[in-house]
Amino acid sequence: MRSCWVKAITVVLLAVLLLAGVWLYFDIKYQRMIDVELARIRAEGWPTTLAEGAPKPVSDEQNAAVLYQQVFQIDFDAPDPWAGSDLLPDIDYDLMKAFREQPTSEIKKQVRTLLTNPETAKLLNILRQASERPHSVFPVQWEQWPGTFVPHYGKFRKACYLISLRALASARAGRIGEALDWCRVGLRMSEHVAAENTLIGQLVSIAMNSIIVAEPRRFLNTAAVSPQDARRMEVYLRQIDLYAHFTKAMIMERALGLAEFRVHHDNPTTCYNIFCPDYRNTIGDFGELFEMLSGCPDFLSEFTVKIYCSPFAWPLQKVDQLYYLTMMREQIEFSKQPYHLVKTRYDAQQQALEEMASYQVPATRILTPVYGRAAAKRGYSIAGIGLFRVVLALKAYKYERGAYPDSLEKLKETLDWQLPDDPFTGNDFVYRRQAEGFKLYSWGPDLEDDGGMPEQDERGKWRGLESDIVWECSR
Image 1 (cartoon, one colour):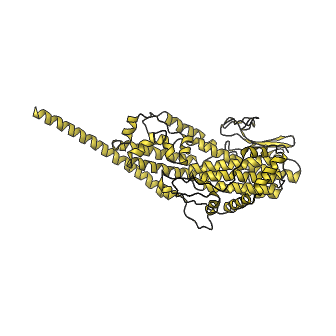
Image 2 (tube, one colour):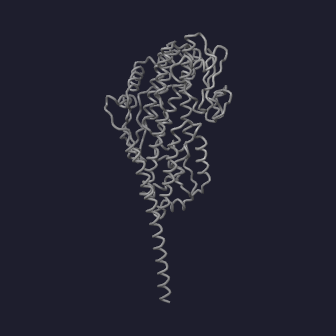
Image 3 (tube, helix red, strand yellow):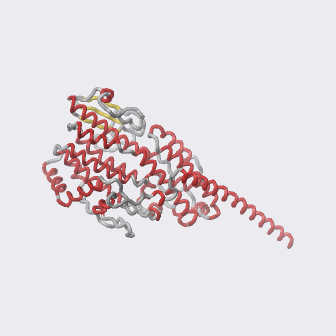
């Protein structure tokens, strides 16, 4: 009987040793593969941590954040940096909507009172000065992920509405050149946000671009623009490079994901939290990004999650991380190209993820959704900027010749610069003369010509992706 027990114990010990050996072999193997890929990333000069990718300090004289903080009043060291109040006036958006559409004399008076208020005028001047500085570096604690807070993004959006109202007020008074100057202020502010190279920063920047570009889409409908004003604005617009910012943000996003994998490896509790639907509430503004792109799906059983997050599953976590690094390398390459060239590749990645079992690379599926939606939003912004440039050229053409050209080919003959392509086709935007004006549009992210159907219907309801991105001028 004793010998049977000895044999049984021996078999169990051998089995444990065999399993431990297999575990150790694969743990070391996959760690080496990760180390090779990380060395490759560093050799390319890209960050593998948030601290490495964070904006570098600059002198106060070059730092727009010093001026922005005079308006935003954010205490980044506070337990809740969102708690403080800024100095920006609260804008009545119903008032703004009325001022955009058919303003009465009373509406015009209210807007004029708001904008000529000495405090508001002072804040607008500070924002203008800040926008002209080359850098904007806020004291964000990037190395404290997942406790990193970016409360200034919301302040930038709020300030952008004030800038857009100021631009529209100038246009309503017939000062188109001044209105375009204020548009430049808002767009430069959006570039400051984009330059932080976070993906949520790109989305905020894109939203700011949309807010600003929406105003000239209204006030240029019937306005004449001098060639000098058009040229100055167009020269600025052509310098905006949303591809470079987006690529750098994707590289920073990879560093963010690597930080998550390190935390998961060291802390099973934190690892478990990521699979909880309430996880986004623990990570500030970044949680909104995760929710928009993928959500935090509860697709694994509690038992499976606990196993995955335990040291027993370290080799599986490393397989997950390797898949993550491969997928991010591909998506970083996608980010360098126009949307119409990579949409099918985004779709293929999405399909591959969807066909996997729920227990396969679960962290990657949450940390790294397919960023096709974000790329499509960037395409919207690129198209908006491109349409703006072409409209300015068309306005200058009419100013000098009395009528719009019959085609974009005719317009090109008068320019010493190349018209931008539609990022959703790779070809010229669609241009059609209409009575005394024109319709100019991009196909949009559905990659189909919908005949110039605008994004909003007659009641202002958003049509979604099944529409074109349209800019119309009636004269």
